[in-house]
Length: 427
Image 1 (cartoon, rainbow, N blue to C red):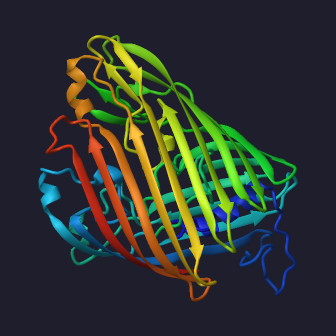
Image 2: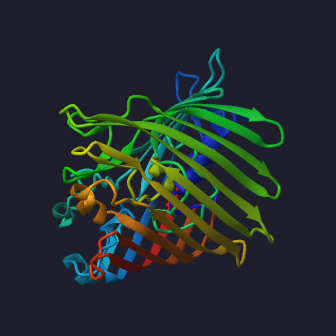
């Protein structure tokens, strides 16, 4: 596992792989009260083993030009465009500990095999009001949020986990929390998953996930649609996804796909269903020593959430003339991890996403199309030192940019250069 930005995935994903693989983890107890797997203890009076984990992480960021997000990493959609007031506010310095997180993992024997649970949270809470700017003054009272919460019994997983088509360990290491473009799969989504293990390090997972779609409308909105009353779209069926994985001495790879159906409706008689899908693939190839190269690509049509750090919409709908269209997007990344020594390493990553909007659904929708993103980039280069396995500390340069469909050349492009220093201590 090489992602520092989600080194909860160092614990989380390691645990997840073990859970999905059906590994019992039944290690011999080394002391009275010791649990059934490393780092765990037996809860008194029960046969449940419990492990507490997580990390404390401090990020120090300096935006060289346009000031970006206050905390929670560099969001592509938050890159300020030229000619806007936020873009003129430059040279911003911030210290934040909001990515810090903790998790609980349990394992309990049963007549159906070992029951395993995992729950994790952090304090970014980027979609809530608890982290309002006013609460930073004097108190820094950041709100807790749920990241992962799932349980497994044998090959079955239920709960909130990274998407079935997610890249897992096949992704570049970065200090920035946001992550590369085109990584595949939603970061976290409620789901039911079945994983079938095959010989030679192969597996295939299938399941259903909570549907999420985005819509460009002629009613004045570019809207992320979930199952909320009053929205102009709804998913009548869950998203269906599958993913094939293989791990070998040369590295590992995965290939997957997801499918969804959105029904656009406006409460005035308009109703139209549209189909969307994505194809996701990535590989990590070992090169020299502990070095590796990483490659990934994603193609979507009406299923843009699989792009990772996404920028576009799934569908366009003109409720006035009844026309609708699924939108295409594609993304890709390439990265290289190099170990200078056993404790000092560097990663360099380039990633890009291209989203295709359309102006052929009628003039009423053009303003919303113009506000949509056309393409975006996320590039990083870093150096990270791990003096002991529990500590990662490093320095990173992050470059992000985006361009919209706005025909005004003075308002359709923005870019951000950020220097980030981070220290992470795991427990």
